[in-house]
Image 1: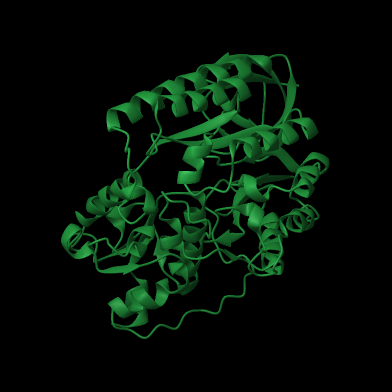
Image 2: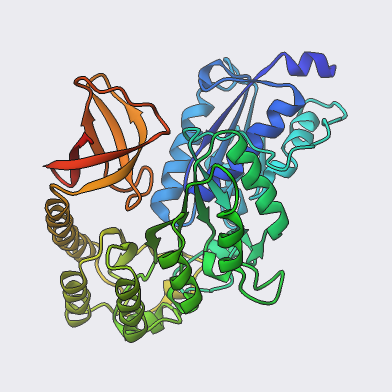
Length: 441
């Protein structure tokens, strides 16, 4: 087969999992486009289907496996080759041969670096990829006004329940100069909001520069023309420095929003999780953030039903949520992962108990968020327009991250707004469970 015959084939990419996976998929898309392939969003139209998978807990694996089985139905009909990349192939104990026969090739994480040569080998041609001259080297798949900036990959934390270090490897920071060049290119493409992501953004630079440089990175990103919002995702409590708090509080381009995955609040559970935090450290950090930024929006994630979580320890978690009233919380029932330390821990919690506890916390948090929305009524906040329907513009404040937090709906009556632009919006009503209605001022 010639290269011309290969390039006559269409490629479809399906991206699953977290926003870090989204960036990897965008790099795959870029390399596919640079090589000359036609890309289609419809898998049933493609001859080559790539599935970028997530696999860090069982529900994510099941979703990935289900999607792969779905596209395998196209094999030998419209599709010729099925390629699976990302976290699922990186799990050393996953048996593709028996579970997913028909998959032609598997590649691990960061596979965007080798995707073209891999496809060429499947068709027995010599790859000659076009030279990459772009500092960005990705095709942004999010709405053009915001993008994720992956500042590091991998993780060194070794939490007892987590498979990510095995899947993604050691923590690896991207060079600061490379990130600034990438962000500058994104800004030229129309990006106004940068969402910094890594397994732990507070540790940025410790491997590459032997010190944490997240504050310096944020300061330099703030100088880029066109970037108006910088958002921090996944800041572990252990290295959340006073300098970073001060930068958030004083830098007008940094959103007063932070995602701090605490996972639990009981010290015994945290120790069993091999987390470096304690209840006092978490509470102390929350107090400092609120003191410096009374309006700061805090998101976290909580694991419910970890081994050893008895009624008293769960009650402490329940009381913590009730007292500290965080703005957004993602709850996860503990997933027993075979190749983790926690798999063999005693006092495993029954699945039915996990689900009851999770449902209880979800209801507590729903009430908290509804009341927080009511407190915003009659206030005017700056919003960015994300999308629109036939009747409404869909907007966000700086206190909400795309896709996972609440929205502000603005009726289109006699109002013309543009996606990606900022507007002053007065909050006038709450849309259950915790979205808002607003009016343009």
